[in-house]
Image (cartoon, rainbow over all chains, first blue to last red; front, side):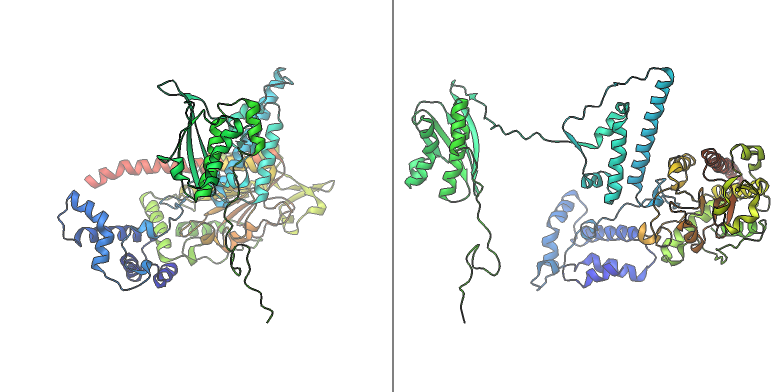
Length: 360
Length: 274
């Protein structure tokens, strides 16, 4: 109730719904939150139907739902500057935050048998895990009794995987756990792994392991494709600062370059930018061989030129041999430039420039 | 829930009077929901009253309505080593009335008293389960944690064999949310925690007017527990026996309840038509 009253006083939550729910709370204090929501939803529905005097048709409902913001702004004109303070009509689910689903039935009995511990999902996981450990031990004892216990049973293939981190476990359990709890969980998992017949519960163990993505140092070469006329071509993308470009390099034999539909001479009047474009081709020694079709957006002329250069170099890799590609990498043509604009800091004029220092 | 209060008062007369009961003040309201808003008190009470009004409750004066004395004999208790206590140095002063003898400094509990107390405890459990009460099994022994949790799961009740956070009973509305229903009976299969001190839940249950059953060993304090059951809490055989007995009594009570509801359901249409 206090939260509702507080939110009423806040300028951001001034709505017809809030007034009605507050009114309801004052007159009917024994109503629970769910019942308040239901009645508010019903009121919302009634208002939206009756306010605009439309016959109850599909089209009227459609227009009501889509034009309701404009209708409310027209019917309740407000001179307030703050847009969030003006009257609005939103579904209560959008206004009030979603509460955690109730954990007990209508008779008050909780659903989960470990509800009274406070951390039901975590403790039920530990309970399940321990049951599995006991199960494996029992299986091993039975095999030993029969004399079929082997020293080298089938092991679980973990590969390059790691245990889930505490945050990931919290996300799976939808519950906060302490670092001590997490350590205990990992301890028990490790104990289960160390048992020889742990392959019985392979699926359960792998559920709590995360595969590590193998980060290869190799440059990914774009595949060489053939179009209808039998001409080889390859596509690549490049970026620099805020510019993004995409280039199609064709093995035509002419040296034509088109950027965003324009000829490169018109697009880049400055020599420096055209030099940047040509550098990868000149370095590989294939100046007149390829046809370039490029699109570029964002940034200024220099950064666009840099983005195009990177895209061209990447696309060229599929036409060149490995040694030549290595030479290009060493020349720095395949490295995206990490430099971006540094932010301005408060108390300074720019990113680095300080205000003029006056002795007195 | 006022029925549980009546049960509590009636059965108290049957107990030997030398131990002090912590929950002396009895209020005619639901366990622990004294500080809740009017809405949350009303809804569960209405449901529970309608639950009990439909089916007549078994009389509380009859001490063994569910015939739970057939579940165990004195010989079973002896075979499960329930009479074995700790050494003389660990003995609690208030446990002296429950001891039979001590041989070579090892205390031996009086199985006659244990049998009587256990019968009472099982009766209370069955009566609570019959009325649809929430039963919470508590034990802080790591050795039997899994066993206790499985027992609770199998009889459809609740268990807490983990670290006890301070406000679970006394601060329930903040811990769990508004309108939570607290347990109507707490069964301690071991009253001590990992540092050999009395479990916090005994004191909290006494504060919240929740009746408790506790298996008290010769080193435990039986004073705050409503229905103490002097017995061994260290041996696996003994623990398995207790779990089995409680589970069977709860299941019996619930089965009887379902039978009575079915009978009531069958007789009601005939009475309305007539």
